[in-house]
Length: 369
Image: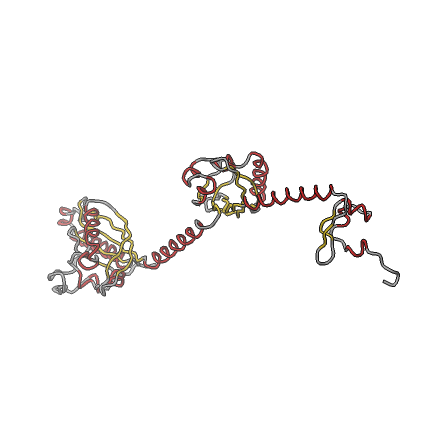
């Protein structure tokens, strides 16, 4: 983009004073002096050429400031405004004529942030280049979120002032705050679920980047100690289930399939806890594949299934030891259980009767139905 010099802003009328600067003219940015005294005295043309060069450099430097799309201001060593660009005027609402020669913090630093602004000035005048996110005040009194970039201005090896850039970040900050609020709500929701949620790498020594606080109530480990110890997860998997668990992980990693498996884990106090582990895979920006999952406690369900199976075996033993034929039917007349004695009476094996039409199996019918 071509650099444009606003001559009306650079060359103010001589004798015109600013309304807030005590009558000072708007200063120019002066390029470093060139020691050409003896040469210039003997060479008038060369002296004129040097003057033109200095003037061009001054115009060029001023144009850089003027055309910067970010609000820019040049301050002297007393923090007084020497030059500001149109972007600065648009952001804060102050024209250069009103603020030239004034301490910049007197009109853009909010009362509650004057100490902060003074600290930034002192640090920059001490030679520090700084970047900070803060708030500043517009002419109408409204506050604006800005990121400040400030650096000391050095001329001929001496501190001459400060060059500062103000980048408005109101929308960016609002979006960031909304994202943080959403993350906080999501975390609060996750940490109230009756399950362990996690983000983890694959493998025996894979790092767990996150585990929810429920790890303490389910397995007796704190979040920090669980994530700090590589391989802690596999060490707590029940020895009889480790092979099938590792096989499922390797298959998921190899084929990119999501994980859905049930296995047992050992709590710190030795309790056996059954989990259903479900995870989706996500490729991170650094190329790693992470598992984002949750482990749902299914111990009660597994215990109920085991108790039901035990009861079923006991019932079958009682039924099959009886000499009388015993069977049960559902509403459609289909056998739901049959002991061996009943099956023998009808000439079938028990598995041949379950679920079939009972009436067709054992009731006689005449030829006409």
